[in-house]
Image 1 (cartoon, rainbow, N blue to C red):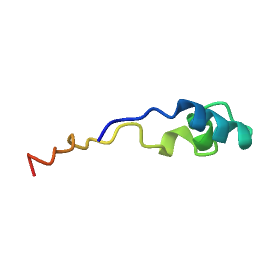
Image 2: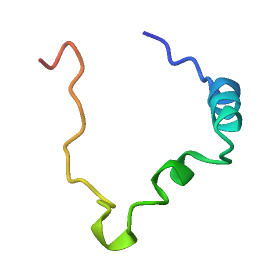
Image 3: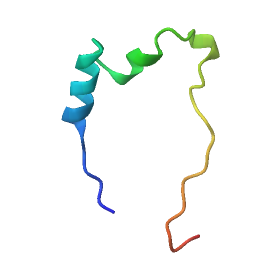
Image 4: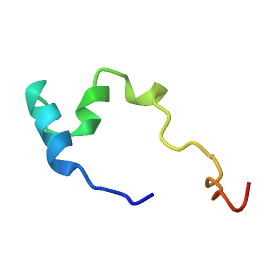
Length: 49
């Protein structure tokens, strides 16, 4: 499956809710309780499963 960038769609949705970037969605969550880095392994391809 090809990746189809949808930056303009994301920007349009953010504009609709008066935000400038995705991170603004989480600005109400205090920084000390946000998870900054989940140590999750990379996904597997169909051939690897």
